Image 1 (cartoon, rainbow, N blue to C red):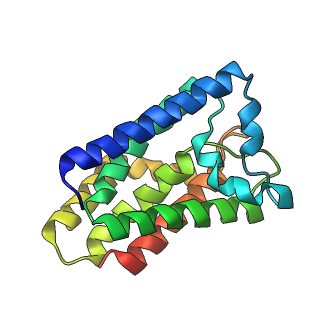
Image 2 (cartoon, one colour; image 1 turned 120 degrees about the vertical axis):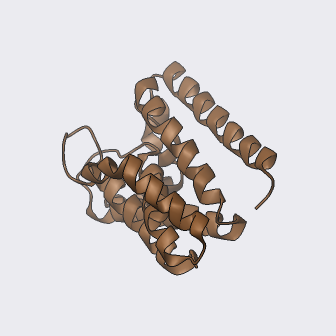
Length: 179
């Protein structure tokens, strides 16, 4: 992977992009949320790729932003190829899972990606044969293990389905590409 300064630039750029999209969404009265995933709607299949960039309000964005950036940075430590594959796995498996199986609603937010990176990080260290990767997995599991409760239904306004399928996407990526 590129040097730390490059990784930080990528993360800051993504953070700025998410904030800019949230501001535009607020100014438009949340009109951009129509680009979220609506399960089993053929018209909404392409929005699997836009839904993670949209949030219901600034609080929703802030709840996702810090864990997203932290977990992305930790996933970058496995190298560029693995990072890209883990990202695509969480994005596609999470989005397709929501599209196929979720409750009827418009599903938005980066939490599916947060859970995807979380799933990757928890398993990937056990799949590799480097102590530093195992240490990352153990620390993430110890500090953030409570996230696992988020894959269970808790509120009609929280897409546990995005959490669940994003997590599965992360586990898939770790199993296949973390060696």
